[in-house]
Structures are given as structure tokens and as C-alpha cells.
Length: 621
Image (cartoon, rainbow, N blue to C red; front, side, top):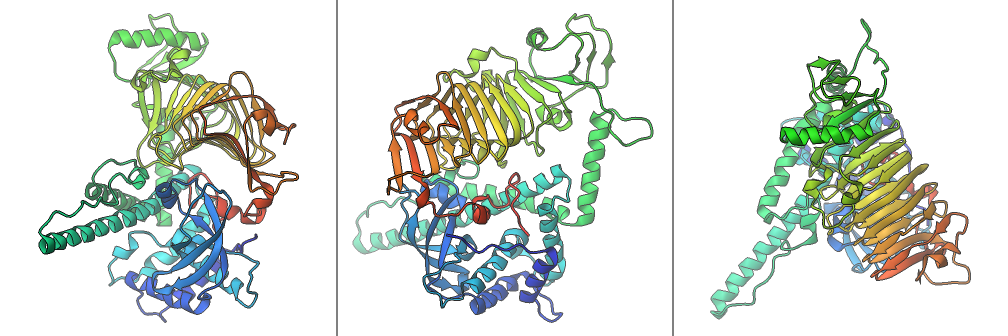
């Protein structure tokens, strides 16, 4: 089932928005913007009967414990113009484990009309065009805080042109990569916070209404009515954005505060001149603070690879022990960076030929300045990062700990070299080339994704990846096209998805355990190559391996369950090799029949990409 898709230029997008929001030179306040879109939609969209795909938002997937993305097929029973929503009736789901109410009230921008309609008299193309304009505006132009703007200011004059230009620059990769990733992260987080706020506020209002009803019953009946439990108490959505265990009111306050911080930063970056100044300050700061430069030139001078030793505050004897341990991993002629200001060419400790002292406060600083082939040594303890650039160029991160300790489930994380991220981040590490990580714990409990591998080969050795164990959308490792991952003696636990593989990706697993995941491994295309070598185990997973879209000959089943990897291997002997075991898994292997796929792959890639993700480059224009 193909859906309508559109590719438009900056000028086309600008003219479309101006046509809706034009008041013949009069001031257009922010409070009037939604009303203008309502009027436009009411004239353009068919009121009922058209068929569409519904891409369920992440926040709803988390609330309903569904995979993300989950896409279902159905038809619109009624368009609610005043709310820019529709009553959507689900008629087909790809995964039989997905259980949804038959009728759902959904936002119009979550719907993608299909090109083939049962009722050919409907203007599906006009409806799709209208929703495309609406979706672009509310995804890339309108911000969650705009509804609070002053009505005495012209919103269109202040923001429309600048934000469409910014969306265009992001999609065409015209901004420096670190800045683009930072802006995408802010936008994605802001929209997700908006969804969280809407859900929490709705739950609080429902809870207050229930409390009022109970008070009336008390007065009328003079007896204690049965207690009603608040929808927010123990709800899965409390673990969605920042896995908050706070009371709903406190959670609301924290989310509003974070949204205010994002707003202040984004309003600076929205201005093209301020973006240019921001990039120059960032670039000059890195060059001045961290890199060698040739006299009178701005170009960075290439240097020999160096090793960065990152330690946490500890007693002197502990630091000396770490230096001794580091000696085993550094060649005798390698320069090592420990701290700043003081440069020493000889040192009493006979560890290295040359040692430079340069003060680095944290791993974040080191990642920001590491060049090609640089290596990083990490001391035990928690290293928090908010890294906004890809890691590449044959570098490495190595933990200063015994290899066998990292994968012991009972070993305390605080005693291991651990990399974690702040609550608001989306992805812990983005890899954009060949890289290796060994003897390190990747603490992914505060992110939605552990590692995004864009391209190149990532080698993980004696590593442990830890998820939060509650989210239905959290992924440990995601491999995009042309990427390869090699895992040896690793443990992945408590994720929704352990490893997700797209088309033209490859994975080699040796002595790997994937534990307590909803889905251990996803093969989303027959072109994905998988090699399971010695002692690969799926332990206590709801589903060991999910294979999406295999032609099952002589079978009309939507999906087929298999007990052994060898049965799956026979379906694709050239790409899927080796063997594995399944311990305490509810199901070992599940194969979705290709004939039951709701989406044709190439025309509908936009539905499968995460909205405004800082890593996924969605074709926004």
C-alpha cells in the first residue's frame, strides 16, 4: 500500500504557509495561527471515508507497550476539524501481537493517506496534500512554546521565514554537523516534552474529576466509596522521557522548566546570524583550547595519534595504579594527555617516552577534540557525556578494568568504567566510521538508544550495555545501511530491542548474551547479514529474533514461529550463518510473511524514520 509523499523546495513551503497565514498585511498573533489552519483544513480535507496509514507516536507506543515505529492501516470515520484530529478506525495491523482499540482519536499529522482508495470518488490527493502542509508546519515550524507568545506581536513576521529556512538548512546539510545535531536534539526533545505534558495534564484533570465525583458520593451516601486509582500512578508513561518516578505535579514542573531552557536556547539559534556566531565560537574554542595550529593559519595541523587518559578524582595511590595499568595498552613512543598547562618532556615515572599534561575535566572534552586514530583510556567510575558529534576515524575507547568483570551481571556499575548520558539525550553514542570500544559499560538507562551506527565497522569487546527494562521503544544498537558491528564477549540487557539491523548491514556475534529484552535481535531486511559464532545466547527475552518481511512459500500465515535458528537459516542460507541457543524465551524466532507487510519499502521510508531525530536525516523539504 503506497502512501502519498511530497518533495518541495524552500520557496514552495514558504508560499504554502504564507497562503494559509496571510492577513493582507495585518498582524497575525500566535493565538490566531491554529484557527487559520482549522479553516484551511476544513476546506481541503475529505470529512470521512478515506483510508490511511497511522504512524503511532513514540509516546503512545511507550504508553501501550508497543514497538516503535508501529504503523497500522485503517480509515477515517470522522475528521474533528476544531481539534485538527480524526477518528481513525484500525482495520489491519502487521503484527498480530499489537492490540489496539478499534476506534482511536488521532492527530491528522500522524496519518498518511494511501494512494489506492476503495472509494475512488474521494479526493485523496487533495487530502494528502493538505495533511502534508499541516504536518510540515506543526513538525518543523510551530514550536510548543509558541502558544504562549504575546498577541501584540506578529508571529508570522517574527518566525515563519526564519524557521522554514532553518528546516531547509537542516535537511540540505548546510549547517556544521555539531550544530545541526544539537538543533535536531533540541527540537526532538521539545516535541516529546510537549506530548508528555499533554498526557500528564490530561491524567491530572481526569484524576481531579474523579476526586470530585468521590466527594459527591461521600456527601450523598455518607459511606466510603471504593478508591479509584489515578491514571498517572504507575503508568508506563512516567518512564517515557526521563524515566521519572516523581509525582505527576512535580514531573510537570520539571518538564515545563526544561522546555523553558530549550526555548531560550532555540530562540538564539533560530536567528541565522546568531547561528553563525555560535558555530564560530564553538569552532574557535576547540581550536584554541585543544588543537595545534600552524602560525598565521586557521587550518588544523595534523599530528601523530595520541592517547587520552581520563580519570575521576581518586587517591594518589589509585591514580598511580591506573597509570601502571595504562602502560599495558600504550606503545612506548605514544604521547599521552593527562592534564593542561604544564608540558613535561621527561618524567620520573618510566611509563612513556613523552607525556603531556593537559587538564581535561571529563570524557566530554576528550570526545570533542579527539582526532583520527586517537585512543581513550577510561578509569572505573561513571563518565557522563552529552556528545553531539559522531565518533569515527579508527579511534578507540578502552576501560582500565579486567575484561571478565565488565560482563558479570552482579558486578556493580559504579566499580566499572561506565559511560552514561544526561536525561534529555536521545542517543548515547553516534558512530560514523570505524571505531572500537572495549571493557566499558554503556549505561543507556536515560536514553532511547544506546548506539546508532551510521556507517563503518564498530567493534565491541567485553562490553556491557544496560537499558532501563521498562520502555517498549528503547534500543541498544541500531545499524543503518552499510554499517557493520562486531561483538565479542558482550552482554546486552533490559532493552526493548537488543540489536536492530536494516538493509545492507552486517553483524558478527561471538560469545554474546542478549538478556531480558522484549526483542533480542531484529532483522528488518533479507539483505542484512548475520553471523552467530561461539556461545551466542538469547536469555529470558519475550522474543529472541524477529524477522520482518521474508517470503514464506506455501504459507498464508501472517507470521510463523520457529524454535531453532537453523530453521530460520534455511530461509536465507547465504546471509544468516552460525547458531545460537534460546533460554527461557517466550518465543525463539518469529518471521513476518512478506505478503503481509503493510508498507512498500522505498516509497514509504518517511513513515519509518523518526521525526526530527538528531541522527536520522529525514527528507523534510
